[in-house]
Length: 618
View 1 (cartoon, rainbow, N blue to C red):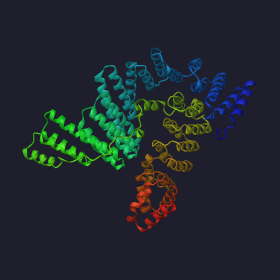
View 2 (cartoon, rainbow, N blue to C red; view 1 turned 90 degrees about the horizontal axis):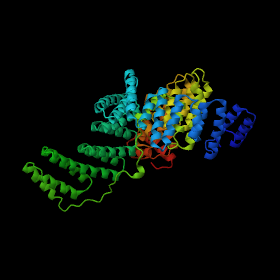
View 3 (tube, one colour; view 1 turned 45 degrees about the horizontal axis):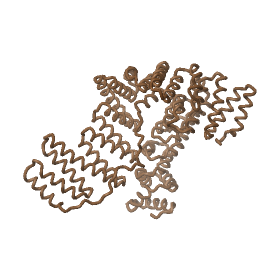
View 4 (cartoon, helix red, strand yellow; view 1 turned 60 degrees about the horizontal axis):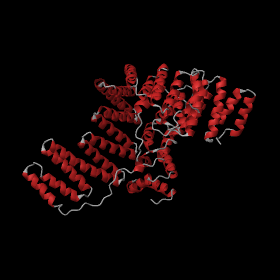
């Protein structure tokens, strides 16, 4: 049973009794409380949404009635309601019908109708997306053009402007206007690069990551490999810095394949070399060997291509020598001999050819060492790929932090989200409709706090924007509720609001933010946590950052903690010692053992104390 909520059967009985007395308000409240049991059986939960929908219709609350119908209803139950709701709700409902429709012609008509409703609501990006889904690229292009001009003229959001230009380029290509597409691509790349620079400067690498991700898509759409390469190089850099090694290695593989497909074999070989070094550093020998062999193959391909193009023979020579180094590194000595023989057939100076012939003779009877070489295993791959942020992020920008809209999207997507997640989003939307329907001054603080608490249970990235909007409220107790909610969202973006909360003028907000820090413990949280530790002047905040870092089991976190034990003040050292005694990660232990002889006497004693408290030998 959901904590703090009366038993389900009691609430349903109360609702029935209230209905028998025609007490619709009491029935509504009882059913709303019953729906807090978000782990109830699906049949029972859907039945309750049907009952609540009927009560809400009788109360004249069409938006809330349609919301509960989104969860378990269908087109038949929703059709009578859509005439009574604003265009935004009609658009979202019709779009959901279109997604489920099997008849292609009717599906196109429904997408068109949804786009019309989005336009009526003034939501240009969502209208354009609906047009695209309905294959109406000409009208989608017109909408993207309108949005691109609006964003470029305001200059307030470079990232959104870059996305709009990219969507304009995509739809221009699909309507056969190559010149307009090229112009839009040029503008998009410029805006995205500038946005990425700004995000990195202010420490928002996750937003810069999105920019580079779109650059990859821009390059693929426009067949301009330089944009693909720039995007991948920076995506990989950020993934590596965030210690997401499997994502990074998969991106390396994708980058190598993309470069090879475009005929940029030299770039592919260079990327394979970097991949090998990174995989070896991360202790993945089989993946490193696979990358080394890929590199050797590609360098030989570079040589073959340069010879076909009648390029200077030194280019082919250098490529083959790079292959020799790679094969030697992998212990493939027989193959090394083969490459040396290939070098003797190049049109080079006779002395060099003789040198390569002598080198080749040393490998005549050499054997290739047996090695384990394989790409990243399937169970470590993330096959879903990156989302189409050029649509998703523009929808977020257009929704402007509306909890009702963000939660509505979740409720209407049963294919992607679980029943429990959709139920929680539905409940949050019902609260948000009342809050957002009132003027900002009229919305009761307690209702806004309840909304923050309900949003906390959803725990999806798309909910961050509504929480960020709520944090801008003037009332400290609302900001406290938002910060408490954010402790459930394990995303780097969460730290943007947490950092603001740590310097809030109200001490209760700062205190809650420091507590939230200790819950945000995940591998790629290290960078923002370390930055907070370095920049904060508040002892309590620094202590919370240390406790959170101690729970991150990476070498980088271990190195920082070891540095605190050696060089920081007594207060920070004491916090680090107590935190390290409680955690179970082994990266700090490995690092401390390896560095023990180099530490000062006091630091050695502290490390021994930590290890002994955990039952480990120094």
